[in-house]
Image 1 (cartoon, rainbow, N blue to C red):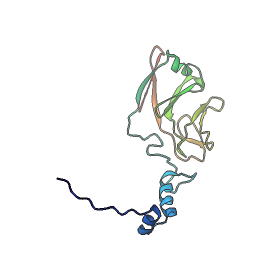
Image 2: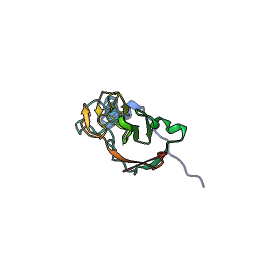
Image 3: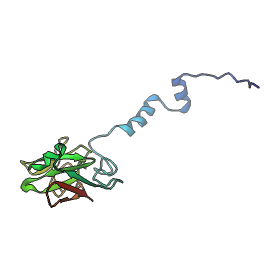
Image 4: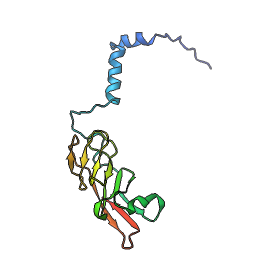
Length: 160
């Protein structure tokens, strides 16, 4: 048995928005507030949940330093990214692992051997090897992870 449908009244988008009491400019501003960011924030400098490395996923991985992909870590100044972590061989041959996300606006940082620091190319924040801010605008430290080199020097484990 078929049911009889009632005719549907159609209205134009502008009429619908006016019926809600909102202009298209007001709706667009709500949309933009959720998608656009600026250089400053009233709630602090943390760009994302876990922006300073406090994510829900636990960090625990091992890098095989004999593979081509990880060869960068065999020389001072070499660095690579593994997930949200930057692993670098700093001056003197030590390994450092930090959150790769700048705490100012979430840009990926890089290691600079000449300055022996971690640098954000977006706004120039600089971090020491222990994650502390050396030069702003970032104001929060980067999360530091533990590194452990195997006795044969071929595997590097990074953990929280």
